[in-house]
Length: 126
Length: 126
DNA sequence: CAGGATCCTTTAAGATACTG
DNA sequence: CAGTATCTTAAAGGATCCTG
Image (tube, rainbow over all chains, first blue to last red; front, top):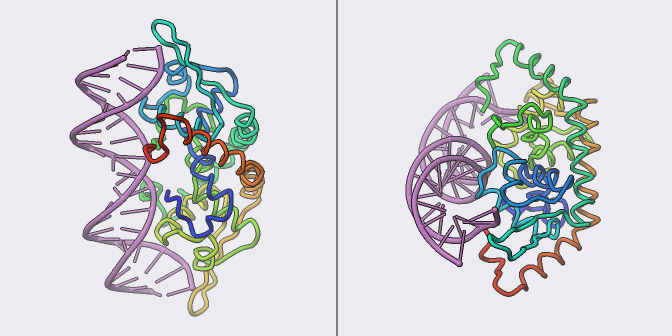
């Protein structure tokens, strides 16, 4: 996903890599419910490497969607929380979750129908 | 993005690669306005290679979000259109566009603030 | 026009090891 | 605990050529 898209004047395209990003969606969803520390977040999201987690968190923090609070105890604890701006995005992202729940059956049915069509094999899809 | 996510029982995670996918979002947005043929769609989306276009279209068709109609003229014409199911997703996706338009300024401001913070350089971000 | 097939480069992402 | 750094592999993506 290159940022230098021809129609880069469109705000959506500028934010597409943030807003239509799997890990960002999952992290925002997790933090929307409650603040979490790094490793708790890692467990909550599930299936994310700590590299991608720290990388995506940094991006979310930079965009003002997530806050990072360090408590200098021993050992140090770092809490990530969603910001007010982040909440507004979380609401929209959550509709993706709702849509998925509402239409997963339709999609699965469509996939099976498609795969059953002569001359097309799902296994041949990239 | 591997499909074998730990919480794969959640519908959203199953559809995340479709629903939080840059090209899918842009293609659905384009077809939501009007049906388009392959190359017209390519120009409308902008910045997409024909490989990714055909690949993503195939996925969208398989998921029942987009229909593909062949008219055997000479040369053959193929029209892609959004389906009823696709429209329901397009509505949700469009809210991402609206959110982007509404909050692009906030995000840009947050980025500048972040980058101005001592010890952090935007250029060092991955 | 609408793609498929190939080759090749770039990026994403995981695994591992190490630090304050 | 909360990361950073490095290495390597898998996948995404682009460019090009080709066909019905």
